[in-house]
Image (cartoon, rainbow, N blue to C red; front, side):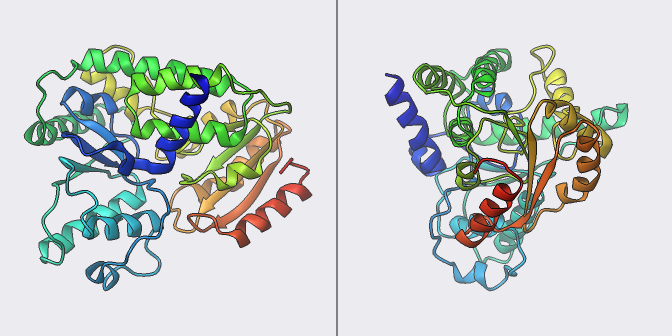
Length: 359
């Protein structure tokens, strides 16, 4: 059973949204920050469409004609897949406004549709959330939450769906299992793949598989290594780090987001808006302080940014200083392609070896 659970997690991660079947109610999420329980309570099945497997994507002429070389790779791959009909069976596609790649993907998709350059497909919805908790910000966020719920209900059937409280309880079960994964001394690769497999699994199935797989997974020795920076769509970088990690990238412990204080919509929105680990948390110093606190005890911290990163790179110098004050070195691997290619991985391996980080 545990071995089968580990295999299932590996397959879910490798296949992505394409491996989730053709059932009704699929909701594509591009970017993090959309409360998953809201999707479930509306009768939807949330599936990540940003971190699609980096398989070769046939170029669609209409997309290739307008997407510049500097466009984020996640956004470009998504647009080509959208044009090819990969998401035609989805009920709706939701884009997180505060994810730079998601905003680009939404803007290009909406404009290409407006021009008639793309065939009809699922409706597109832009999810806005202000990452602070002032009264005006909360009022805006609640308006956006109502708008999201209306968009979901217009395209989903909530018959038989869990209530919001029930959906939140299921997410709590997943969070508890993920906390056990984070505490276990497993390899960086295992932690990354098993966590992000949940982007394509229901919370209860994901939690059960995590616990079954952890029961058999061997533990490894060594101090933890911190990992910060951009979302990572593959396990290539994690394969280089032969240690347990404290992964605070968007594809690490930041997903699926914090639990609300109470099982109601207001608390859900406040928790998302005040999450200090979200890269858009305001003010920026709050995010940095949260990272430093969570990275305490790490032997070293590895930083990396995707070539099109628009947020995190500015924070690396002050983060380096704050970590140095605690005696924790930061190794900056610099900008990388997505997915990382062999040349970049070779340079990263050499950099980690020179810094005496096992790789």
